[in-house]
Amino acid sequence: MPDRSRRGRSDAAPRPAPGEEVTKTQSESVAKRPGKDPSAVALGRKGGLKGGKARAAKLTPERRSEIARKAATARWDRTT
Image 1 (tube, rainbow, N blue to C red):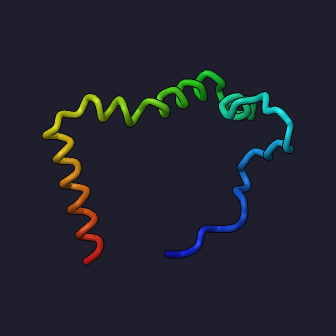
Image 2 (cartoon, rainbow, N blue to C red; image 1 turned 30 degrees about the vertical axis):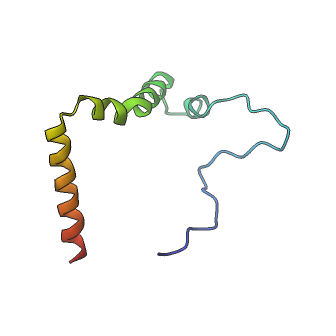
């Protein structure tokens, strides 16, 4: 497996100095960027935090099994 890149992400926010307190959350810093609607950013984050758990809760065991079977088939087809 290839090594991970050692360079940092260019779009990452700068890290605070040791002992410096962080005052903004990630969604607040994204919401301040031009072209981003703050309410849309908040709504997207809210949906992203609960998305997978909510989807898993509403799936029936049969549907979950069907999804898993399809994923396993796709993995095995890719390796041959």
